Image (cartoon, rainbow, N blue to C red; front, top):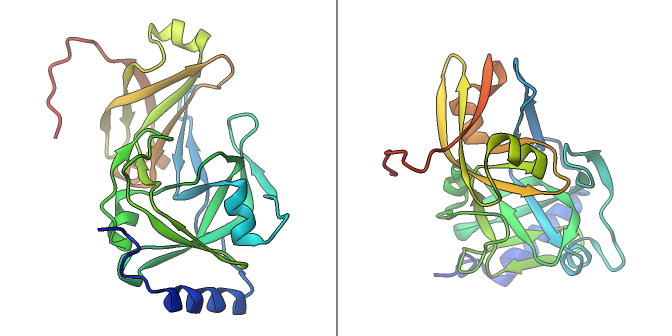
Length: 238
């Protein structure tokens, strides 16, 4: 069943009016990321829930001619957290306010949430690589100027590591390979199967979500180590 099937148009309009009355004065409860370098040069960033928008959807949500306003640069060059936020509405009128938009815009819109966010919204989140949204659930996005109903695009982004080709050569991996992340803390954890996203310009950076970061107590990590995953590794997947 489509994620928006139980959300009637009049309910969407009521939500929009409510948001406009509040003057869209969202707080910052959806901080973009936190980094843990520990004793290593490796940056591990925890990405909170966020939204990527197309130009068309920016204008639909914020008004004709509107463009995103950069508020904070992200670790990767050319990417930023925008001042703008939206409300994400799932089935049965469940919603998450204050969800940060990341720029620049894309050719498609995508919502990235943690599993706990999906539970809160009533959406069964598939784990996908960013951009692989075919057949995923949809949701409703509410902005100060309008509403966008996404037929698909709501995912839990699979854990991954950005790197340039020099980094890849150093680790002995290539784009699309898998690696493991070992976090030493009071809740030490081995995270397997990080997707390698290697190109010519990216900085070395691991991306995990808030559930994963909290499970490993990343803020108090004493060591973070990225390891090549051996082809013969004999571990099972849940």
